[in-house]
Length: 122
Image (cartoon, rainbow, N blue to C red; front, side):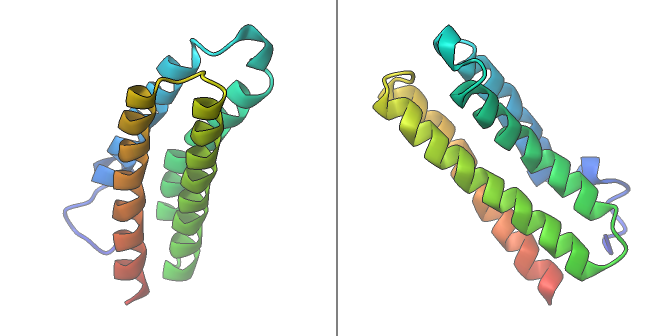
């Protein structure tokens, strides 16, 4: 926002990582049971898409408060995904190793978002 090196939200590492994360979520949920297509699969995918979308939308806002609010919404979507992935693990839709891999990616994005929120709030 105020960083002259950033020409666009696309330059934000957290946005780039969250877009890659969405791609991973789509790959992982492709193997979920067909009966979950309009249930858990759709919910996880919507939550995942919400993360980079809210980062981008917040970046385009004209105030730090709005930007921070959209980043907090993105962070909330990550918490939703983490919960939904835990449910998927419990239902054996995910292996424990795949769950751990995806969960750690979400935690990294969560830490990056928290750091960015703190920076913007200064």
